[in-house]
Length: 104
Image (cartoon, rainbow, N blue to C red; front, side, top):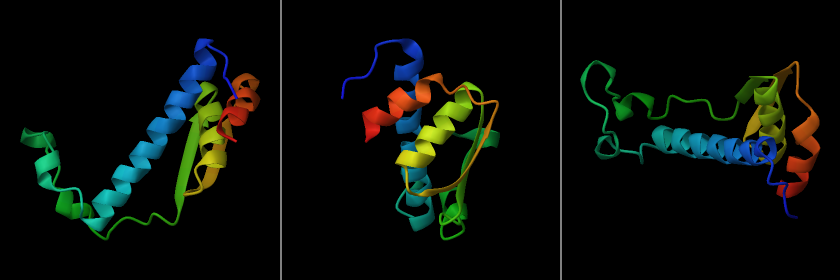
């Protein structure tokens, strides 16, 4: 199904895909397959990737959003089965139905 070219709808699709990528990265961190070589952040904010290995509880992923973020959270939790809990506050419902049909 084609999705509207209007910004709110395309932004929700983009954000859901970004959430899926974040979960993929978290899985790789937990498995230890994302090594320090992929981490280009240095200094005080550097990330020791080994710290996360086998420490993340990816069976209980939750997502929260407000307004447009809530619409994104709702669609993401419906599409991404790794998300187990969703909290939406003051949801902007307008883009949810059309974007949901894009993913199904």
